[in-house]
Image (cartoon, rainbow, N blue to C red; front, top):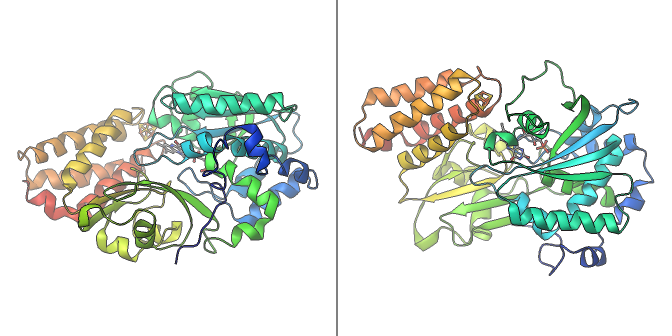
Length: 407
Ligand SMILES: Cc1cc2nc3c(=O)[nH]c(=O)nc-3n(C[C@H](O)[C@H](O)[C@H](O)COP(=O)(O)O)c2cc1C
Ligand code: SF4
């Protein structure tokens, strides 16, 4: 049974809700007065209690990240909103910034209040040129209306690199450097932007904050599961009748979602596979798709991940070798090249897949792919390479026979 959930998509169907006047008619910025009832620390506590998890792919608890931000530092903190959205299969954040940009701005203002930040940056995918204009117009409107008296919001366009969505690469890029991921600290700590403590959150994470502040942590927890509370803007592409972005609560059955919102598989064909959470999550088989629910825990138990919830649905006519080759071309192009296993591994795997696809490969090449995947796992600066590794393994676990018949 699919419940209607509208935490971030409430105004999506309202005409011109991207304009300030219409957005305000429907409650935009009402929470700014309400948040004054709380201290910044109380705001962080509410976010912790809501169980809000980051919606940029990792699902990290948002409240715990916010709590890392210093409350008594003389240095001002910074908020960075990640709108890089460059992963194949993921196209949800653009819905928020075009259909309800004031919701994001309201979330930014609430978050800045909680973490005591005066500067916020929205790092937006370079190709989102038209969407960026809508967001900039909304920021200008909010400024003219006096909502941004204490906060500067700056929109920064990326230059088209997928890796710049990784938060530390994003910050390097924002600092004007090449977008290379940084080494991870041993202990949890804030990110750093020009030496200032910085919080990086996804667009949808920040856009979920007004609902939580307006309605309370329990209202958010009324959706989803115990460990994956709330909702997600799941995106669906591929062989479905109605591809698109639809908000649903965590924990619903994947097939119910595909049938209810997607209208089922196109042209009466059978389902073959689903990439469940954007291109960097492992593929699952039709049988697994029939069993799995859309939450972090269920997908992890299948050896995949919920990621961004961007589902790529594939029917029985899909060649899985071609799909993996297509993905490896992308990964090879997008590896930043700092780590040898990633730089060389993506290129080598791409070459081997080309050989297999052109019927010039051998069984040894298939085994070699698994060895390359093993070398890419756990030995690199960022999780790009381990994600690619798990994708290769998932294709060879679920669909090895398709690779075998080509060699
Ligand atoms: C290769 C790579 C690309 C990423 N791209 C994005 C992105 O486009 N948008 C995003 O919000 N997070 C992206 N992430 C995750 C970010 O590093 C970070 O975890 C996220 O922005 C934190 O926000 P959240 O906790 O609200 O999800 C990416 C991670 C990796 C490894
Ligand atoms: S794993 Fe790949 S993308 Fe990440 S830092 Fe290393 S080379 Fe760059």
